[in-house]
Length: 244
Image (cartoon, rainbow, N blue to C red; front, side, top):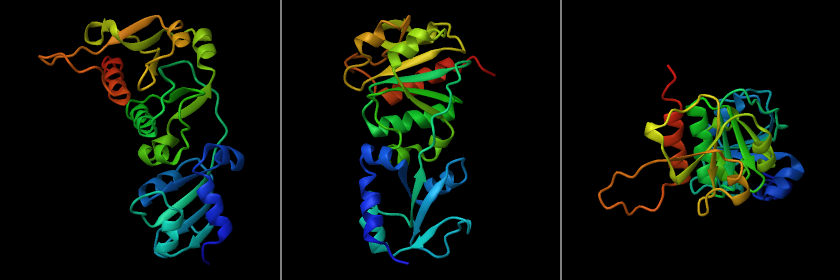
């Protein structure tokens, strides 16, 4: 079976958020990522493969295509044998009895993907995103999570309302905050990380009670700031330091 024009139209349309929302589908590419998603709770809609020997359960809807056809629907520079269409799941209830990462206007897909992987690595199961944070089913996000997307509960909410109503202490990163290395940190809290260029918005800042800074150790002290994903990694490491 070859790739149809309707297949091409659908798959390429899913590069845009409005069509992902319309069809309730997203795209994943490559053997590792697709296998991670197949092993999860996600439902697969269709798989397109270039290798008949690719190890897939026979229950899935599989279409064998050529490498040239895969290039027509792939967004990767070097397409890797398989492209999958997966159903976007319904959002689950947010568990507020623990540690939560919240994102305020994070725009870069790579940063979001890295933060999702960090949450997975550090055992953070809840990631809360403002409505203007990049879509977690953006294909660049999906690829960069390397499967962690299925192990972190991601919710898009009115972030100001959520933080205002939460009983957990709310922390954020700020150049004028308390030194994270000398601060006693709780195991149940919300860590809010902001936009790459502007940090957290003024309305979100009003809900934050505690500010943390990652001190600079360089002699010249000229580095303006850390990448949001890098800063998240350091802060998560410190929050988790007390766990055994």
